[in-house]
Length: 77
Image (cartoon, rainbow, N blue to C red; front, side, top):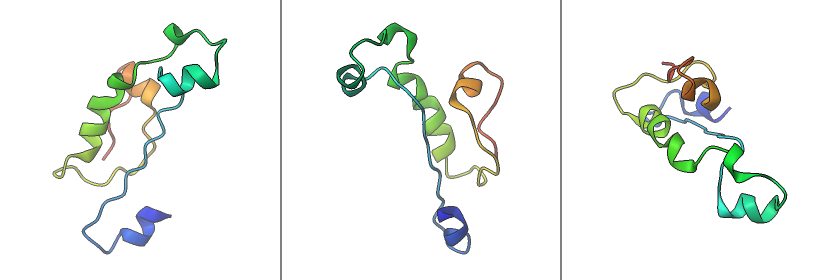
């Protein structure tokens, strides 16, 4: 919706939901969870940079972090 509202502007909206990540806050909220089973937040950095590049077109489909990480999906544009 936000992207649709901004389509006639120079502002680009990219929303990122990385799912569960290995953070201190997650460990405190889920004390029984094995943090080794979760990706480190630094792993999503390259995807964030890719999606934030000014020279890329607006993504037109959902980019799954887990698929992107596995090399199955690139930042779509």
